[in-house]
Amino acid sequence: MSTALTCTWTSPRADTAHVVIVGELEYATAAMLPRLVGARLADAPEVEDVRLDCDGIEFCDSSGLSALLRVHTVVTGAGRRLHLDNRRPALDRLLALTGTFTHLTGEAPASRARADS
Image (cartoon, rainbow, N blue to C red; front, side):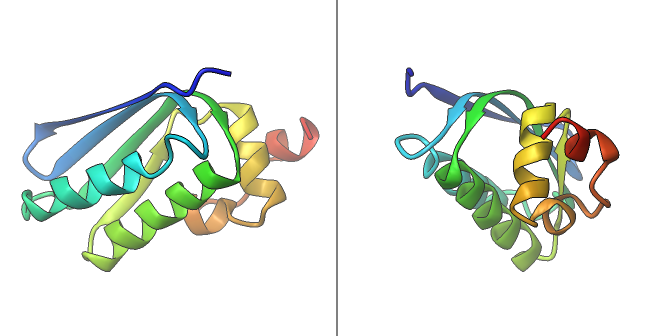
């Protein structure tokens, strides 16, 4: 397993930030994501929605899940909304199996996540 991860923050609209995540969200890389989001949010008081594009997440372990939970805490603690967009079935399964799906997405777990497990 490589331990590469890139996180790219863009603000196509003043009230919305997009964070594209590409690579492995795991022990060696996971701390990067909450640091990036926290630092950027501090500099962007106009941002109301933070949209994590999860399509590029190739692997996510418990440290990666912890990073997503920390991002949720950072974003909601600042009075903003977090969205996990373009989730792959493996990420949905991880969230469903750990009981964090609804907490992180605000949605009920899809039958797809249960069926694929």
